[in-house]
Amino acid sequence: MLFNSLDFAIFLPIVFILYWFVAQRNLKLQNALILAASYFFYALWDWRFLFLIIFSTLVDFTVGYFLGKTKDQTYRKILLAVSVAVNLGFLGFFKYYDFFLANFIEAFRLFGQPIQASSLNIILPVGISFYTFQTMSYTIDVYRKRLEPGKDIIAFSAFVSFFPQLVAGPIERASNLLPQFYKKREFVYANAADGLKQILWGLFKKMVIADNCAYFANMFFNNYTEHPGSALVLGGVFFAFQIYGDFSGYSDIAIGTSRLFGFNLMQNFNYPYFSRDMAEFWRRWHISLSTWFRDYLYIPLGGSRGSSYKKVRNIFIIFIVSGFWHGANWTFIIWGLLNALYFLPLLLTKRNRANLEVVAQGKYLPSIREVMQMGMTFGLAVIAWIFFRSENVYSAFDYLSRIFSSTLFTIPTFKDRHIAFVTLLLIGFFVVIEWIGREHQFGISKLLQNKPRIIRWTFFTFIVFLIGVFMKTEETPFIYFQF
Image (cartoon, rainbow, N blue to C red; front, side, top):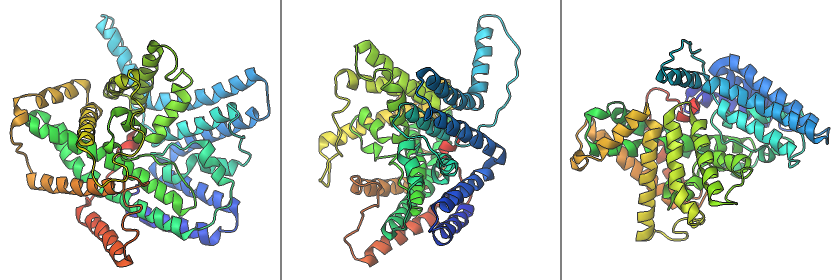
């Protein structure tokens, strides 16, 4: 079930009414309703993989229970190993089996020893990269004694399968989300209204920005040999806004939907394209994943402590693993490697935490220096996105080589140039709104809050109008569903 579908537009109000009007006074009934709705939501993708979530939930709940019962360190390590092995085992099998098999066969062929093996063409369960990391955060935190083991299987199951963020995050920490299932939740109008605004802005990002950018990104990337370098630059820019609008749009809808039910999820995107260096970019892009890797991989490896060799090693590990998390393709690994190279000079010169505050905080406009820094950072991100989007490594390098050619300085000619111009105007409108709202959780969070109601509602109606005019007639999945 897609957030941008008629099915979800029917599903959400039904669950909302049952949750607040039927189960309002009973916390256990509310959690059971959330669990049933989440399982139904996921089963509409493929009901067979629902058993995978249930099994993973039971394993981690059981591991957490026994971790709370024993102080024997050896036994505790075994229990943690079971949880990690089950979660990473499922993830590795469904996501990476065919990738490793293909590369294994290719390696033998290069050494003159061809072997025969058949891939399984395994279907990737939607959301497996997200909920496995979420449940692992639970067992790791219980093992570290930073979190008490859950005692309510319904509440724990609802935490694992919570439908707003089940298939594409944010990857919530058990220490943040799980306790919210144990506390009585009251309907707060202001929170619900804010949640609806965030859902609206998320739908605008997805249906107006991402889906319209996708048309041109696909045109240029799928037929890049037919276009000049100037057009390929546009392709990279369109994809940069496609993936940002698509993924941050999903996160906004997930966070806004959660607020309708009295839950608070972590912010997953914090205006990353206004970053002044790549370190700041990674503090603002897919925050739930980058902080997960920081806390459960980077810091245990030693983080930025120790020798320069260890610092460099840890940075490369964290970014390469992050790239590999995104998919079983060498393009993602090189994307991660490239971001590590971007990050490394900042770390070694101790400037990786130079830009912690919001750019041009309290000001209407950035300085010339900040504009140049943001432009440079965005340009580096676009180059990396080319690897992320390309079908294979050769195509990515070929795409880049065609950009940096004499055709870079030509006027691009391609089909539907007038529509591309309109799309660029929409991106400009989007960037202006995001800039105005960059100090708040999402773009229109506090926009026009001190203006008369008629002005606020006129603006919201205009956003709905833009969605209605520029939305695609077919339902388009979110990019990160494939991860």
